Image (cartoon, rainbow, N blue to C red; front, side, top):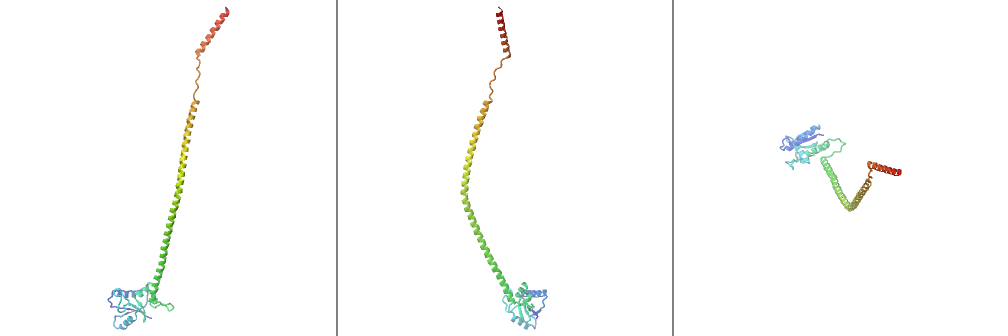
Length: 241
């Protein structure tokens, strides 16, 4: 089995030239043996007709998306068609190039380029389908969380409204109790002041000093004794007469 790459050495399409160079470069880098067939060379008319008749992909480019005849590069394995540049590049990207070129071992299931592209498209579609439900579930979960949060806030507000009247009543009771306590403290303070005044008055009375009796002068005592002595003398004289 001989791998053949059909190219055009005289093509004026720059994109065709770049594609041909890339195909040959990839095959060389992977050490894959191949034959290059230039359909523009003299004597290659039969090869050109074979390529154009058996190529099922037209190899369209940006400048020529719908060519009248299939554009090179086109890849064949002997006379069996493998695919155009787009199929070749896709197989290289997903690492199935040997299968695409029909060089895989006999026990390996051969997969055509169309099947490779179909599988890839299906894989991308499945991944998108998997992501879509996940995103939908995420949105639904987010909405459910938002609803739950809103319900919780409403419940908290209702609880606060219920608690506020009770709190106000408790505050009112505490305020009246505080006033009564303050009034009692004022009365106790007044009583303490009155008691302290009475105690001060009583202490003042007790500490009043009694009048000290006047002391008899020493001289007065001496006069009294001399008088009594004179009386004794007069009595003695009278008795002697």
